[in-house]
Image (cartoon, rainbow over all chains, first blue to last red; front, side, top):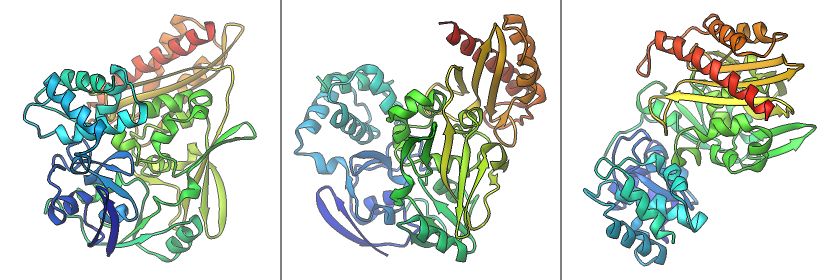
Length: 150
Length: 289
């Protein structure tokens, strides 16, 4: 099936079988490597992308379902001011260790701050429920997101 | 490639009518709404449908309105939409609390209320609140609509009364006033967790006696259930800690838990009592404020 969607601001067209998962299309066909393969069952959050403006798990979405939508990964945000603010805050607060979960957290943080502007720690804790980090213990990630919203 | 789903024919429909016409003709299909349960179930091989009917973009089934003292929710309304809606927060606080404690943001923006019900997991978290609100479900097919009570809807684990050519179209929830309410969910951790048991409780008190009690639980029987024995015991009895204590013990007659990866049957029996007890006290306390 021909599927057209806007990936990071550019229209892309792929020819896929209906059973292909968006995660596979992004990594293997379109070379988007910030999107990671983790649990592949909607628990860990490393495959998070923004569909239109909302965070979704790309392991739980058929590529054909992206047809006509906008898909955003961090590759599409490099020149975005809010994105820059978030990554500086992550670096400043030490919210990164191995980095495997980081793109997912950044996208959730980005969607959250786009939506609410200034956020309290409770809002951040709720928003990042769907992302696992096995290094930092979350405290620094929460601090980083709150700090970036100031 | 990472995991690969089995091959299937994919149909994307844009309207309810188109969906109903299609499923009337198709055999061996599964409905794709949010996909957050279905795709995982296909991945583990629980389902291998030849056809997938994607209804996720049928916009006419995404709404929350109040009409005739009822809240009407379109089956494809996303969980996140329920959370961000003031009608749900104000008129259906038990549903709000249940959805608040479901899954994660990434899942709630896709998962639908209708999907949670039709998937018919014994652990469906929207079921206990809808059961204590005595919700009605509108089922639709090419032959027209029928309205059933949520109490008739679940037949067993992943089994509902939906006919082969039927879709869940709408959930209708009567608005109840002057009830105390409480919702508690016990999982293996605090956030983003499947329930070991969840309890939704509504109580009405008149002259310090229980005049109405409705309690529903999930994850402790083949389907979500109402605690009929407890309810019957309480109605007409005086509101006191002793009465609540005695009543909660009776919940073991209403449930038939199994042991699974999340908890043992014995543990579920024990915590069901505790949660029924605690939700009753909390609901009563709310009325005294």
